[in-house]
Amino acid sequence: GRDLLGIEGLTASEILSLLDLAEEFVELNRQIEKKRSTLRGRTQINLFFEASTRTQSSFEIAGKRLGADVMNMSVGSSSVKKGETLVDTAITLNAMHPDILVVRHHASGAVALLARKVDCCVVNAGDGAHEHPTQALLDALTIRRNKGRIEGLTVAICGDVLHSRVARSNILLLSTLGARVRVVAPSTLLPAGIDQFGVEVYRSMEAGLEGADIVMMLRLQRERMSGSFVPSVREYFHYFGLDEAKLRIAAKDALVMHPGPMNRGVEIDSAVADSPRSLIREQVEMGVAVRMAVLDTLARKLPNA
Ligand code: CP
Image (cartoon, rainbow, N blue to C red; front, side, top):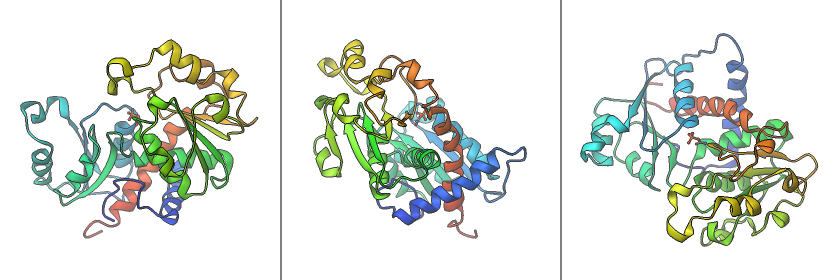
């Protein structure tokens, strides 16, 4: 379609085409001259209602490397602060004829709602606990480059699955490409109905990491919790934090991932995060390439492309 709202609905072949195109951009991004002109004359607006370091900056760099004019809407100083609604904000920006809107919002479904109100392409940069499709694509690209494949791998997604759009998009994508997906979390951080996602569910790291090829850690999203549901950091790290001892339970050549932002000493020990088995910095590099692939693919569907 015209938008990228989630991994849900994408076929394996659509996902693989995006990954293959992203591989070309990985090479381009390592050269001195990094620019293409696919998006020349196009306007991209990044509209972020929630904080971001990686996603917003990499969408900006990706758009600029493809030749777009990129504008970052700073919601903190916008009229949202004066009570303007999401839909009115979208209609206002739409009147300026952007070609691509990249949107992050704290509410699940908000990006899809906005997409129905505007004429341009909309890319979901994370909506509540629903989806973060470009994160799952960059994770898949990172896995494929390091393991040579995705099909048949055992991927353990560990931690705060309940609040994680990254987990949801990764479960959908990795299952579509034939990986075995496990989720490992305390019962309080597992969403209801998780067993209907076709994943294996584990409530301890000792069981869930056994033989895993990829250990994907999630941030404990304490800002989305309240009262007695906020676990103590010390206890959480003891049972669910990834340290070298727990990593030894996984496959001998297991690799470690984290979407960022990391809470060192909460869900992951620094020694593991900074070890040669960590793919965390490579994930960030792949983020730019994957977002270029997404923007390039959508741009080809724009009117007069
Ligand atoms: N992984 C990720 O989405 O990071 P940011 O919140 O910094 O964009």
